[in-house]
Length: 262
Image (tube, rainbow, N blue to C red; front, top):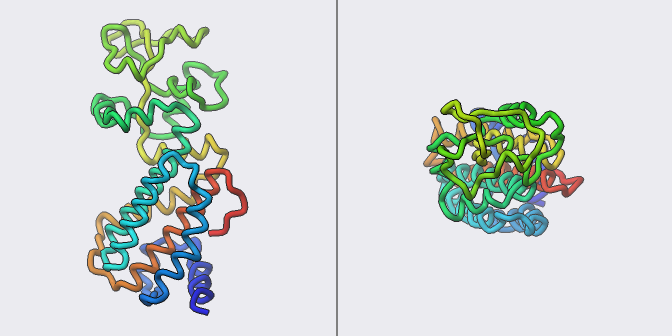
């Protein structure tokens, strides 16, 4: 069966980066008749297990868009959609595990304004350093402790009150100062970059972030600097489907669905 051959391709290329596969050139070339059946067999069952994710609809729309681009040979745009799926899968777990105000920051389009004003988590290590500097007792991330990874501000410099909490609400914290030098009165949520988001989501769900890190890094290099806007259509679809399968498998593991085979 053709699906057996494609599954053999998936097994043979497991752990190999997308760009390495492109460079080697030994790619599966999916026919038009195989494309729909492979999608139904490989992708649809995984999507059915992800329906509880907060940003499930974004994932679906990205898959539809990526599938169209892959079939047109626009490999760059196809993989850009895959990269967005990683972001939305991790953001779903992060928002669910911490604070729904992050979702409000997206809906109200405050996220980019907060980033522009310096409310950023650049890495997982940075987040945990901030948290444990203020409160070494914290062992888990939740709706309250995530504020400790944010930015300390005084009353005068409070810019985003909806996304802030008073320091007094914690009790027992060491004194922390605002950038102006005054004692801080509030902690304001900080927006995680994608690299931080992947590891924060993995920490919350007790999952290994390495697979998502690796795939995201590979896809970023497909998007830039290489592009691949005119790739052989059957091979473009095969690589897109292969990477999508890896991504959905990793998100399922992140989501707590065990024994998911890539």
